[in-house]
Amino acid sequence: MECTCERTEFRSELELVRRLRDDMRQKLEARALTAMNTTGDQDERIAAVLHEELRKLVQKLCDVMATIKARPPRRINCVERLRVTESITESWYLDQDSVLRAGNARSREFWLYGYAGRMVAAVFSSHNDIWFSLHLEICPGAVDDMLDWPYSMPYTLSVVPPHDPQRSIKRHIDLRTYHVDLMLPHFGKPDGKPNLPYGSTVASLAYMKQLFGSDPFHLTLAMEF
Image: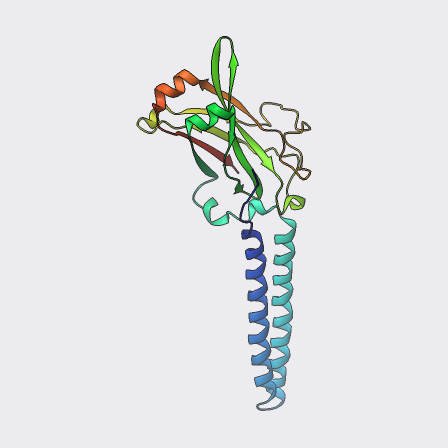
């Protein structure tokens, strides 16, 4: 399955600053030229002040642009949402038959805090039972060179029953608390292909069917900032 994610937020941030910078430069230069073309020495002094003001403002905007370029996009792209919450959740409705036939399935690619990734669901046999597991798979992204590696942000994998959300099953994975070896191939910067998935067993398949009946499995991944 191809990773097909829109990756425009980071570019939009830079373009917004560029437009603001250019608009400010044009307005201040127009004011300065008007002052110089009117009434002599006093206005020339005003023009000089305006030019200095312009220089400082443009420098400040250039500094902002440099900060945006240097900062991981995960701290930029979601700034409006971070004012309300410190986590972002992706949902996936998985047809039961598809994962049972293939043994595993992958969600669409999503884009959280600059990282590209997707959920991976799998079924496997163990101890005379069939189990359902859920994982995060880090994919190659357009701005990987600007992100922190190895990946270490906490995330929570959940199954959410449609008729009784109170019975949701959650698996919280904090790589720093668990002392996971972050040098494993699951967490490094992707090298042209998705990393190995990393997650947890959620429940037996029999219990999943009790929760969902014949409905698609509602699966979520919440990434925490």
